[in-house]
Every structure is written in structure tokens, then in C-alpha cells.
Image 1: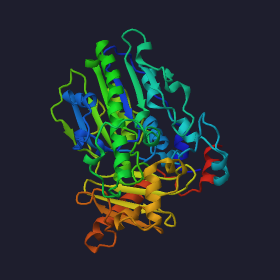
Image 2: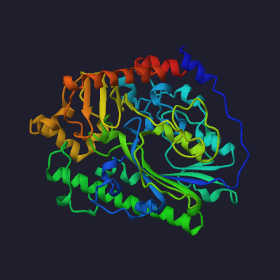
Image 3: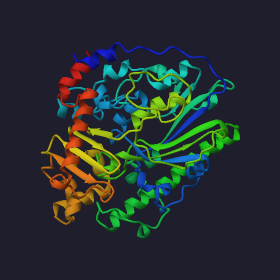
Image 4: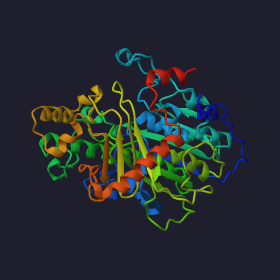
Length: 463
């Protein structure tokens, strides 16, 4: 077994610190399946989101927060453990099926049963460390971490979970997930009354500008308005209980989406997510915008740092706030993807503030994997039909291209939707070679498990 596996199995737990009644409260408001580009504080004024925007009165907009994987369960595993999924065996979507009905068709296609990585199970989640140091921790209500999360992670994890059940004056960490913006709401709320005019929306160049696309976009913006209303209820409850002023509030999304080539895509549309943090009243925010390169593995150490607690050395993320804030800023951010439901794939990517390099290992498969769940969406059905009829533009067809290019390289400043692949341009040969090296070094450093066939990996991780 590799060196890193041994390190994980001998993971040393932290000792508990003294309880501190002055520790801040921390609240997470999580919008499911939303890219950064849909929000007014990033320049899209299609809808007003007054409750989330109010956080900016003493808050910061973070411009470069990245989901390590462009799909929920692997991303959530990174958040709770502070580790890259491809280093702890949680990178394959639906590896662990949780309490869901077992999908025999998926197991039959893959040739092995669902599994939970013992590497991931051995890591103490940051919420457990908070609990051991006096915090009351609740999750409302997603528990889809792609592995079996220990019960010690939460005081309560359910649809009824709330900080209100804690002891008097006990500091809390509470998470609320809002499913109204999930991918499935694009078809389940398709007939709801729209809160925006589809004809006034800007259609991204990756989609055809037709009524189907515009309606899908309008449904999503309408869902965001409802999300903002629901989040406002939680925020108002804090205010009514005189807790708002001493509470950090994080607003973010678990990955991009909810559209094709957003969710499940290694491109910025799938990995670059919104992040707004409202600070306690005692901390006066001076700079309203932050451009540091951040990743979901940074959340666990950052929350512990805010709480004044020691960060486990094994965590791969970096604290960007609090007493343990890391001074050295990232020059590169790494993202990855592996299996999505019944479709295995493997992609790795690295970017800096200007360029992005993507390495595709399974070139015989398009980026547009035929994920059955997604085909319930009218937009996906329309894209498939237009592609079959050869009615998509050259740029729009790139997502369906087979074989896909083994390497991709983009200038993010001039080409934010990553449509002009510069991998063969000799003017960028030096930068491309540097990115190749950076990616190789990162994969070696974290002991990337993606090169192991999943059937073999599952057996190794469950021993």
C-alpha cells in the first residue's frame, strides 16, 4: 500500500481546546448547483437577490472560489474533510449510495457494488473537531458525502436540524442546503410562474439562442429568487434572536450548474462558484472584494481557524481567514473529475489567474456524457437533437466532440467560456509545459488515485 495510505490510517486526532464563550457562530447557506455567473454581485443583474446582497454591508465577495469536483458528492467530501477527493477515494460520483435505493443497473454496468472509502472514513471531519471544542453543529440536511461519515460529525443532521436546540450561549456551526436551485428544479419547476422575462436574458455562447434555452435560463433565475426568499427566513431568524451580529455567514454553491456544460463540466462554468462571507459586527470589512485563488479543501481549515482551533496537519487545504490564516497565496488551483453516475471518465485541470490547462485521459468519450438523470431536462434534449441534426455552431459542438482532445489550454481572460483551445499554439509552449509540470507535481504530491481502475480501487479502499 502506498505511503499516503499508511499516513491516513495512522491519522492522529486533535486534543480538545478550552471552551470559549466568545467564539463566533458560523452559518452556511448553500445554494445547490449554481455557477458564479448568475449573481448580481458578479455582474449579472437579471434578478435582484436582496437577502444575500444584504450580507455585503459587512461582507466580502470572493471572485475565485473553486469546487474541486463539478458535482455534489465528491465536492462535499472535500468540504467536510479538507482533502482532495482523488487522494482519499471519493472522486467517483455515487461510489457510496447512502440511504438511497441501490441502483442495480449502475452496479451491473460498473461490475462492482457501491462502496465507502475507509481512507475518507478515518479522517476526522472538521465539524467533529468543532464539537469537541464546545460547538453545537447541525446540518439541514444533505448527508451525501460519497462515503460513510461518522456520527460524531453532527449533533443533528436532519430537515429539522437547527442551532436553536443548542445549550444556552453555546456557539454553533449550522449548515442549510437549498434544493430549490438544484438541477432537477429546471424540469420539476418548469411550469412555475416565471419571475423574469426570458426575452431579456443574455444567452451564453455555449447554447443556441432559442426559446428552449431562454426558458431554462428564466426558470433558473426564478429559482434563485425563491432561494433568496428562503435564505431570508433563516437570516431574519438570526436577527430576531440577536445572533446576527456575532455570526459569520457563508453563502456559496456546491459546484456549477444546473445546466449542461455547467454541472459535471471541468470548465469554469462547472467549477467556479459564488462565495460571499458576512463577518461579525466586531470585524470591520475594508476590502469588499477578494481575488485570491481558493478551493473547497480550504473550507475545513478556515472554519477551524475562525474558531481559534488547531488545524490538522493532514488537511490539504489552506485557511484563508482566522488565526491560522496562511500568508502564502496560491499561484495555481487544481480541479478534477472522474465517474459521473454510470459514466466513468477521468479529467484533471490546473489554472492560474490567466490560463487553464486540462488533461483528458479518456479521449474516446465526449465531455457531454450521456448521463440519464440530465436527459430529463428539456434543454439537454434539445441540445442532443440539434447536435444530431448538425444544427449547433462549431463552438457549441465542441462539448459533443469525439474524440475529445487529450489536452486543452485556454486564456481565461479573453476566452472565459473556454471555447478557443490554444494547446497547439507555439506562442504558449512555455506556459503549457509549466502547467503540465504543475499538474504532474500536484497529482504526485496528493497521491492521486485516479489511475487505479475503480473496481480495483474499491477493493483496496474497503479492506
